[in-house]
Amino acid sequence: MRRILHFPGCFALWFYLLVTSVYTTWRLTPGYSVSQQRSEVTLYRGLRVRNMAVAVLSPGFQEEFSHIRRPAMEKQQRVPSAGSRGTPSPDYYGDPRECDSDSSEQEEDKMEVQFDGELKEEMISEGLSMFGRSALGSEQVYLHLNLSNRKLDNIKILCSYIHLHKLDVSCNEITDLSCVGHMPYLTELRASKNKLSTFFDFIPPKNLTVVDLSYNNISIMTDLSAHRALTTLILSNNNIQEITGLEKCTSLKHVDLAHNNIHTISGFGHLPIRTLSLASNQIKNISGLEKLKSLQMLDLSSNQITSLEGLEGLEFLQILDLQDNEICQISEIAFIEDLPLLHILNLLKNPVQEQAEYWLSVLFMLPRLTELDQKKIRVEEKVAAVNKYDPPPEVIAARDHMANVMYGIIQPQKIFDSTLPNLDTPYPMLVLTGPQSCGKRELAHRMCREFKEFFRYGPCHTTRNPYFGEEKRFDYHFVSPEMFEEMTCSVRKCQVMLYNIV
Image (cartoon, rainbow, N blue to C red; front, side, top):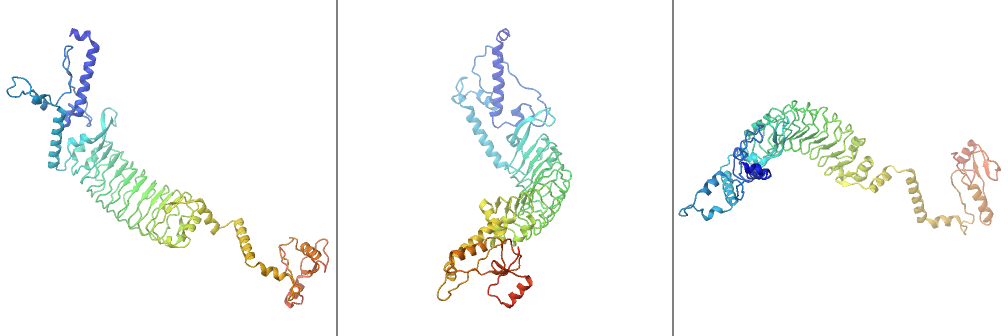
C-alpha cells in the first residue's frame, strides 16, 4: 500500500489501462448475451448503472497486460494437457480471436437453422445506434433501432424499449405493430414491405411525425385524428380504395397513396399538404383538391383523367405530373393557364401529344414553364411560340416586308414592262399610291419634269379640301362626296381615284 502511495501516476495509468481493457473486451467479444456483455448496465431500458467490477493491480505486477477473456475460454485454458506435469499445452497460447471467430460462426449458423421469426436481444443489440440522452434528459440511452430485413414476424419484445426515437422494421413478415404503443417518444416509424393488414393499430405516440407503411396489405384507412403531429404518411402499394381519416391531421405535409385502388379524390379538407402522390390509381376526374391551398407538387400519373378541371385554384402548385392519362385537347391547358408558379409539366403518353403544333401551343399558353414532358425548354422555343400565336407589331411588319420582297422577286418584269412605252401601249399609265401626305404629288411632278417625253401629269379627283398652294384642275379636281360617288357609278372619267380620309 505504501508503494501505491509513492507512485500515484503509475496507479492512475494502471487504472486507465484496466478500464480501457474491460470496455474493449465488452465491445469485441462475440457471443455474449446483453446482460453478460454489459455487466448489469442496462443500455436502453432507462435503468441506472448499478455496479462495475474493478480490479486493482499491485505495483509489483509485472506480467504483460492482456484483454479479459470469456469465462468459458479462461476455464478451458487453465486445464493443462495430460502428461505435461502442470505445463500448458501447445494450444494454450493460441490466438483467442480465432476461437471466438469460430464459435461465433457456429452460433450464427445454428441461429439461422433454428430461427423462428421471434426477435431476440442479440438482434436488438446489433441494431441499436445513436447513443444519447433520453427524452427526459436523465439517462444515456440508444435512440435508433434498425431491424430491417431480418425475417421477423414477432417483435413484442420491443414493448420494453420505451426510449426509441426511430424504429425501422421494414422488409420483414410482421403482422402486428402494437408494441409501438409502448414507445411514447417515437418520432419515425418505417414498416414497409411487411404483411400488415391493419391501419395504425397501436396507441399513437404523441410525437410521431413520419410513418411508412408502404408495400403491405392495408385496405381500409381508419381515423387518424389522434396523430396530430404526423407530417409524412406513406401508404403506397397497398389495397386502399377510399381516402378517409385524415381531416384532423393538421400537420400533414407529405402524403403518398400511389399504386392503390382509389377511384375518387376526397377526404383531404383544408390540410396543409405540400406534396401529394396519387399515381397509378383509378382516378377519372380531378376533384377534392380545391381546398389544398398549400399544394406544391401533385402526381396524378397513370390514371384515367380526361380533363384538367379542378386544378385552377391551386395557386402554389409548382410541379404537375399527368403522364399516361387520357387528355386529348390542348384547350384543357386553359384550366392551369393562370397558375403563377407552375414551371414543370409532364403530359407524356397522352393523346394530346399527337396534335399538330402541340409543343408551341403549350409553351404559348404556359409561358412560365421551364420543363415540359421531362425536357428543358429553350428560350428560342418560347420566342417561336409567341411569334406564332401572338406576334408583336415589329414582327408583323417584318413579315409583311418579307412578303412584299418575295412578291417583288417573283414578278419584277411584269411590273416594269407595264410602265414603259412600246408599240402596243405608247401612252401607258403609272399610278402612284401611298398613305396621306407621303409625297405622291411632288414625286409625280418631278417625274413629269425629268421624263417629259414619256409622262404627263393627270390630276385626280378628290373629296378633300385643297391644301395651301394647291390649284384646282392643276393639282386635283376638288369635288364633293356626292359628285364623286356619282362619277364613280357612271364611270364618266378615265382618271378616278377613291380617296379615304385617314
